Image 1 (cartoon, rainbow, N blue to C red):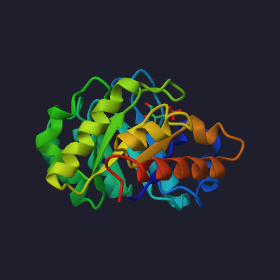
Image 2: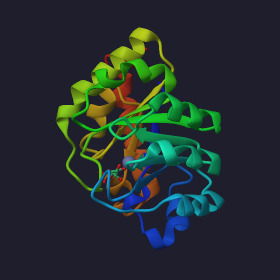
Image 3: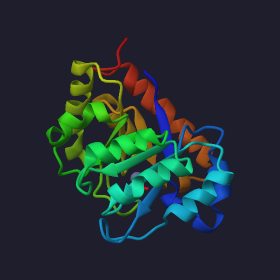
Image 4: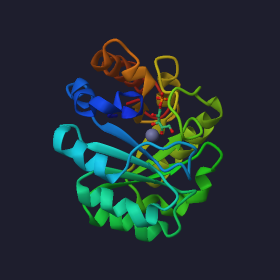
Length: 228
Ligand code: DX5
Ligand code: ZN
């Protein structure tokens, strides 16, 4: 079972994004970019122009997480710009099938995110349309929040669905993922791990990525779903 780590630049120095991307390039799988519009979430970060600039400098594929009220309008443009994954929120999208297909048609992987209070049953019919299900383990909007254990049963339920239907899709967790919580996520069924403060708050971000990866791999290997 492959474990992937996606450091979130939300906790990086925004004035030195290219350097911060380079700091994890040798050990991470993705670079997670949080797009916030101060409407879907009470915070404002960056948008398409910054993503376009970052694409010119970052060697890792970009994992764009759109926390915006109008993903139908904006998501395909991130894929067209070159983001390798574009994730939209189920709570915000109005025409999910059309928008997810537009992301894929533009050459990116399509992700669908659920806030902690949104049940996975809400999107069961959409699972064949996506490449990754993002289960938020905090309320979206800010880095450095405490991990919500109440999401763990949902991670497990999602993994059961994926296994039961033999779907080819990744399960990502985002929010409060750190040395203290990554094993619980992996045991429950997650395979892609976003970490902001646990990576960019560390003295050595590249080593922090490796540490999380080792913990997640060991926990997956002995888990109910990942045991060989
Ligand atoms: C929060 C963002 C996260 C954030 C996670 O809404 O979606 O990607 O960067 O930060 P940590 O890992 O510090 O909780
Ligand atoms: Zn995120």
